[in-house]
Length: 452
Image (cartoon, rainbow, N blue to C red; front, side):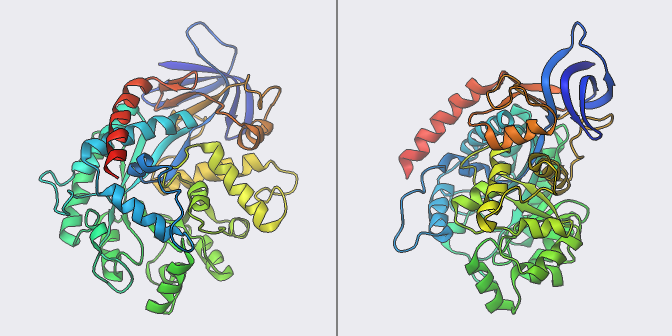
């Protein structure tokens, strides 16, 4: 049994001082008041580890390589062509090395689990690998090595745009028919089954990439598993969906896809007031990726309105141009401030904004990933983050002021330690296997850069 003593800990009942957290079998066995004892691991400030509900691991290696302006107005659709070129160059070994580096960075940033929205499936020519799940196995191997919790979400991707249009050549490594996708899901399930706490989800890439029948097929493969889909990220997507169906993307999903608590709509940026209210009432999670949405010029999610209808949301790092719990939550709130020209948008009067967004993202992220909500409580998974009380932004802070200062005032990383399922993976801000992982990543990143 492992025991951690925390000077301050954020529990479901609120902040507590001088607590001892007993961990057994990857879960928290007990939380009790008490001073530190010999043999206890020490933490000045302890909070639950955040779930990251949406990631494309392979894109970590291209971060910073799409910042050359294209012709005319540079948009998501221009960025996507760079992404296609990069995806066409990678092998399963490349993906394993890049994913491991990303998982190290996620853990060091305070994420304890990640949802990998996995659509890079096939060999360079678009044919399935002999081992059909080779890419899924690469992702799972990286998670196993680094210790991050993994919800692997294989993605059905079949068409280039609405109406079942044929895919374009740049998408060939993503594309599957129904039978092929069923085999991919089976292989992904086998890959995560070997991981402690591994979870399998399923996804349709977007309404432009699957037909209604294909979306229903994907959802039926794992009827009780998390079901994800990109929705309403770009204005052009909304316009194209209207031309195809007479409905906006979120509206179409609400009317046709039987949305429920198992669903996570990634981005959902462009919604009407009615869509916002209906999505909140459905119980589905809005999967927000604030840094990527800003990077790609997507627009502003109606976060305050969604919260007013008791909508559930979590955060993800998506394209992985930057990685950080505090950074995603800060971008979420500051985008709302810019859109509304006001402050502390996501909190209720008199309440902490940091606490409001942190608690909501913990709960929504866990729901979207099919995982228990991280909490410092008996029976919860021992997924924990310690913060450095000597960080300039945290000196003298107590209670919710810790979260406010970490999220909105820390200009350098404040995460000191991370435990996943009770095993310490990060100490003094550094992952225990950082150097070995980085060495492999560096070789792959240099080789990939030379191919572009």
